[in-house]
Length: 149
Image 1 (cartoon, rainbow, N blue to C red):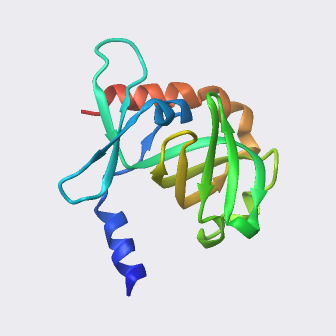
Image 2: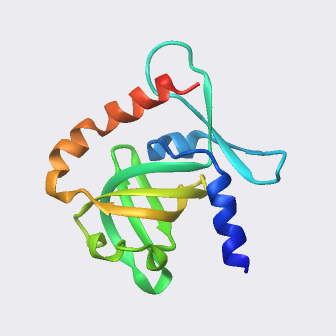
């Protein structure tokens, strides 16, 4: 039963926000009225530097190390490393988990410092067009963050 309450709590969260690992590292944790942790990051891009609250994020990067026995993977984006936990529970996540693959991860933030840690909800292999995905990623992150309220 505990799994279903955790699942419904995840569904109640806001949609994932595209972020870079450096934004999470530099962010701060703020408790919400519901008692759930939410993180506040600085938006990318020009103009007014409003803060952006996030709890579920979308990140992309290159797999550096897989530790199946610890249920984690270490990933590198353009700004640093981040850890993804819960990889053994993600449907279709395993095939994309080998060093050198470029992957997308959607997950719930577990920690932001000293290194961001996400609990995976979804993973996908983007290696087929990795060059395009990697090149455009920072622009996608900035663009989304500028249009969010």
